[in-house]
Image (cartoon, rainbow, N blue to C red; front, side, top):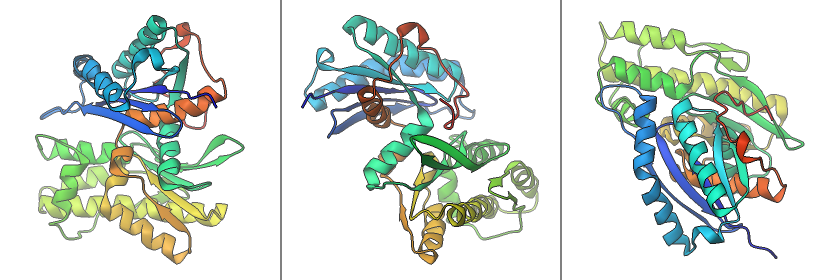
Length: 320
């Protein structure tokens, strides 16, 4: 059997991740750009990726005991994501492919989250709840194609949390910081909105901002997160009843939140279906997932010419 060693490059947002998959073993290394008192500045994030990429590649090659000449193909996250950071990843993938004469494999970032989740949790055909900074979607796969059953109609769940963190003046406005605050809060009344299997968060964000005048920050954060998670749990239950799936996969950066995991776990228990969450290292953006899906795509000969290795900022999970 021919061994294929696929290198993966993840650069859709604040994290640069390098991964390697040989068909059995995963290796990866990553570094995160952490802005203070501001959101992600695309140019600064791309500069960060430029500073750390060589170190990360060396880490992965050392761990796998390989060199770039032994790589079979170069996979890269072509989208969706931030233009400047995607452009860095595309440029790095192009350079490596040309220098070492390797095929280029474009990977959809959202699909990669799903595939590594299935691989890590040993799932076959789940209803996927994908939650990240810019994406909040309910997804199924049929005949090797992905279908979105429901999604946010305005902002992603991760962006909801990060934006509110900046409104509160947090130095590092990130969902993990808000999760710690929520542990000290109690529930107050905030908007809750579900539209079939779709959800909206804009009204919740506006109401949370107004509540800062009269309520403790910890109470607002707890209630905002509770309602965001509860609304998506309701939509997920509706999708589960529609599809009759026997597995639920929660993946993406926000999937690391324990409050959300517990809500979905209870819902899954009531319907007697398996509920699974990948390891946190695979939920956060990483190069391993790009290498894993890239390996699968390379086996199916889904490569592109170098000239086509350009960012696809709005590449949906349900589009080719």
